[in-house]
Image (cartoon, rainbow, N blue to C red):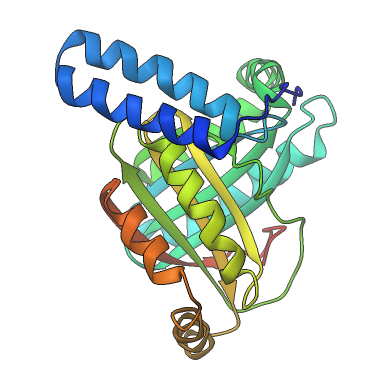
Length: 267
């Protein structure tokens, strides 16, 4: 997921006007082929504005048969550690987690590639090497699998490997088509308040797979600490407004609590 993308600087006024124009176009052409084409163009334009552009992160979600969890974990560790050990791939594993609260028997692996060129190179090697056998070894234990390619928000790079313990929370928002730039504009301002209480793990928006989706991840020592931090946050001026405005741009929101696997670089 590596290749630097040149970013242009826009004033907040320009960004707001783009977002408003996006919303007006969608409202006029909602559901038509023209609206879908406009939405795709806007998504690409917004990606250049809000994305870091340096890496592509593949979110690999595996839904595992409940009675095969132990076997799956062993196969997954062999496969993902094998990828990291192969210098040809130039791939990094940001983390591997199991869902503790949310959709159970589900595992998330986040792989980092050197942009799309790096993703193309690595996946081609995987498909024509011993890694394919490692991948196939996981398949008998799966009910389903989904891969989504995401880009980091420019102001929110993914945390480096560490072992702080506790729990991870992944929050996912399905946005209205064309709302990415407006959502980022509002959330970026509000998130500075949250940094006073807890350091984020990462934030991403989808590029391939389910579109118009954003994710952000946080790490807490415990559920009690999470509750206290969130209560403190609501005392900060402007945070309630941030939540109110961003919620109006989302179709739905999900929160999943994750526990890292033993081989996860982030834990």
